[in-house]
Image 1 (cartoon, rainbow, N blue to C red):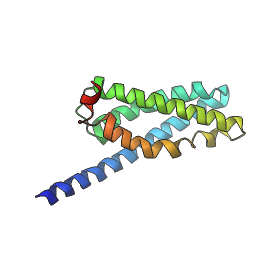
Image 2 (image 1 turned 90 degrees about the horizontal axis):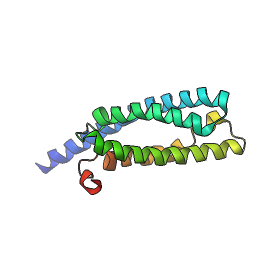
Image 3 (image 1 turned 30 degrees about the vertical axis):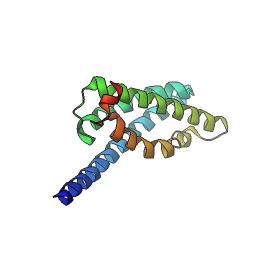
Image 4 (image 1 turned 90 degrees about the vertical axis):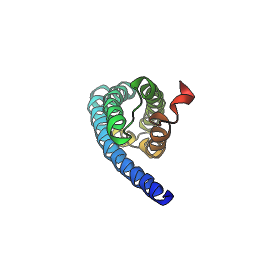
Amino acid sequence: MRSKFVNFKIRHSEKSLIRWAVVGTTTTAIDYLIFIALYMPTKSVFGANLVAAITATTFNYFMHHKWTFRSDQQHRFSGVKYFVNLSFWWLTSSLIIKSLIAVGIDARVAKLVPLIFIVPINYLVLNKIVFSKNFKHLLF
């Protein structure tokens, strides 16, 4: 019996990871295209990254909440945790992008560099903290 449960958990995790990759890839495309479209005429990393992040992560939040992690948490719980996570990664990525542009790296490349750090960590944060059924009681 335990073996069936473990196999179910593994299959569920694999499907969740695939859904996360689809949503993440779409979110990255939205974020990148908006950033480039706004950065090129304005040269404002923080402004372009803020608008791109708000747009892309609104899509990302609702897709992850309903489809990827199939969360049954109320938005007041998962939304607050998601916003804290988003704020941290927005600030981190903006500082990395700004620093890379300052040393001469093209904005189109600099925008992609923070993903190397964000992507591996963010799946775990979203799965284990933001949309976790077991983590809600620790914060609220």
